[in-house]
Structure formats: C-alpha cells, structure tokens
Length: 443
Image 1: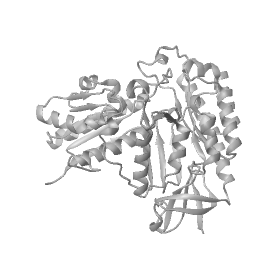
Image 2: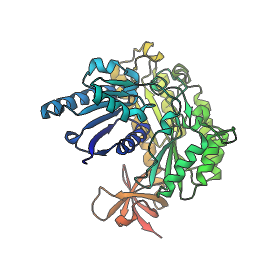
Image 3: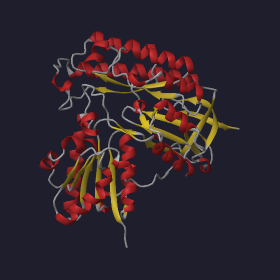
Image 4: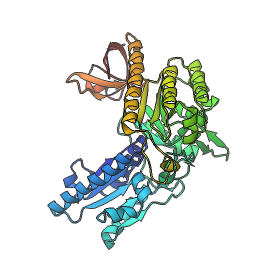
C-alpha cells in the first residue's frame, strides 16, 4: 500500500523543532511518509510560534497559500492541521479566520494528532484540542530515533514565570517536569544509535525538578551529572536557561564535567533594573553579572549568548544605555535580539509605549553591531588554537570541504572526507571570517 504523504513546516524555536520531529516520527507510525513537496501531501502540518506578531501573521499568510494551492489542484482530501503556540493561543478562533483548517492541536496534545486527523476525515468536522494534559504527551510518542550525531531531548514543558511580555505560559501551560529516569532512558537510547551531542530542552530548562525512583527530586545539575555518565555522550548543551534558577550547583558542574560545552544561552532581556522589574524577570543586572562572574571563575573563556528586547514599553535612553553597558561588561558572544512585539493577553500589552519605531530600530541596529564586534574578538582569539569539533556534514563551500561545530557553537570549515560526518575530530583554526572559521584537521 502506498504511504500517505506528510508535509510539515516548523516555525520558531528549538522546542518547536523537537516537537516537529516527534510529529514526523508519530505520523510515520500511522502510515505517513514525509515529503518536502507540499503539492504531494495528504496531510499538511504547520507547527507554529507566537512569540512575535510577525511570526504569527506569517502563519496565516502561508496557510492561505496552501489552501489556494489545494483548491487549484482539486485535492479536496488534503488535510491542513495547525499546531504549536499559535494554535494554543487562538484555539477555535483559528477556524473563524481559516475555516478550511481540519485540525487544531496544542504543544501538549501533538500525540493526539493521528486520532484527530482520522476523526476529521470520518466526520468532516474540524477537530480542536489545545488542552494541557500533564506528561501524557511523552508516554504516547514514538521511540526516540537518531537522525545524526546530535539530538534534542525535551526534559520539561511549559513555563511558570509569567514575564509580563511573554505568551508562553498561556500557550504551553505551567511547568511540567519529566521523571529523571524517563529522560535518562531517552538519552541512552539515542546514544546507542550514535548520538554524541545532546541538547536538553525546556522553556526554563534549569528549573528542572524531576522525580526519581525513590520519590526524591533531581535538580538540573544532578540531571547533567547523570547524562554525562551515559556511554557515548561526549557533549551536553541546553537551552533556554533562566537567571533565577542558575544555581551554584549548576555553575559547579562546569568544573566537574568537560562534557558541558563551553557555551551557555542565558537570556538577560535588558540591562536596566527598572525595565527588568516591569518585565517581571525577578533579578537585577547586578545579580545577572554575579552569575557570569561565578561562571567565568570556573570557565574563564565560556561563551555567553543571550536574548535582548529593545523598546520595551517605557524604555528610556538611560535604560537602553544600561543595556549597552551590560553588553560591554559581559562581552556577549551572540544575541537573539529584537524590537518588543506586543502580544495580546499579556500584562505588557496594556503598558503605554511612546517610543517611536524608528528610535527602536536604530537602538536595535547599534546593539546588534556592538554584540557582533564582541563576537569577532572572540573568534579572533581562537586563531591558532586546536578545537575539538563535531562534524555536521559537507560544507556549502564546495566539494572536499566539511562543516563542523566547535564547543563554543561556531561553524568551522575544513578539508576532509564525508566519512567524517557525525565524528568528533580535532581542527586547528587557521582563518577567521566574519561568520565562520576555517581550519585544518590535525591528529
């Protein structure tokens, strides 16, 4: 029997990428085969993100194009499904705007997608389920399947921080933590399939509190310690961490295991205490810098990436300059920075915002240039050093070149054979380019 075709498009963050792969694995269990050609699809799934307004509007624009293509081709049986945070936020309202959608599911109900698709096909009535069943999702997903030497593992879902600008607690629900053994078993299964690098995922990943078999709770530092002991795992990454739960125990782990990469993503959002309070972040700029100072006492050359919101309602020039000063003091290596986007239903959406958009854009440009300059300096400091890298595959630079990722999250290209893919090798950095490194493999 010919397999049905699944076309899936993922928007947004690594959590969505993880969920998207689980959707693919799940639908394969129910007779589907993934295709990159949307016109071939029997089922089209959009796994969405609503962190920013533009991302949400792009979803509806692209859905309209899919509907038009389906109608032009006369593929009346093509099912269109919307999942992720836009689905969770909008719920049944999506059907008012796009009544042609057959299935609407949330991040916590993706495991119910096969049954929802079948019911829509049987009844012709759109199916909506955006509930938040605790942990059930992980009990009904397909067995973990490695697709490369690097893999994501979700250790928790949701968020209980309720930052004033953020929709995540409303779209993904309150924090739910997977039991310790469930996480370790998944990592071990991936390692047995050749995974060498694992990225632990959570909205506030370092808030993890997983139940152990004896009923006690394991914190994030303990989880990392156990993951580091799994045969085959050579690198541990995680995202996204929150300064409130960046404990001394976690910092100490950087001295205990070299499997923790020399890179951490620690969102600060602003360098102004006044703005941080309005954001309800729960820490000050001084407390953030204290975390960085203690981290660098253990790992002096650790690379720190962050998130920054420019133009939060009420942000003054003084607030903005406090953020610019923090960037220089910390020496951020990378930033996911963007102009504040008002999200309906969040407390910040009701705050007065008098800063002109052109001022916000100018601030963002200057901020990104400052962080870029810090990043270049860090890259230049790597010239002549030997880096242990994970080979990702052939480079875009041409035949005979391979692409790899360094411990501090940089791409390095070097001459090598494709048989090196998914292997760990040593590369000496010989050239520093604006966005990548060049190197040569050494013994």
